[in-house]
Image 1 (cartoon, rainbow, N blue to C red):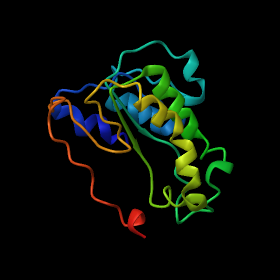
Image 2 (image 1 turned 90 degrees about the horizontal axis):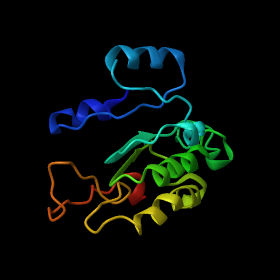
Image 3 (image 1 turned 90 degrees about the vertical axis):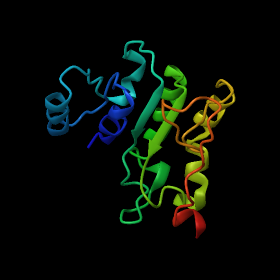
Length: 161
């Protein structure tokens, strides 16, 4: 749970805020990260305070896309939170966006769900500074300069089938 803060801590990155609504995970986050505010419900992001961030890292509920689930995709309210994640990215305009999910997200509704839901992030990418990388294409770290060679991730099993 909340691996990004731990993964990027050695690079000197600090978490600006969290977004969790369930009581047990929220309590654990409060224990692990007592100085990091939990803004709560991501659908209420317009009420969140303004915060300058370099990286937006997160994921949306995976049940609607998972190969192990019902695969309702964007017709499932949890799946449509992908649009909210894109709107949060548009509001905070980070240099980097890292979104994670499960096998099945790329093939949900024959790929149309992923194509539709990442539209806000693709639009945002055209307005980013030269040298910035969108996580849908590449993952970058703060220790890399804009001129650094950042390779794209290897193809996933799903993207090759």
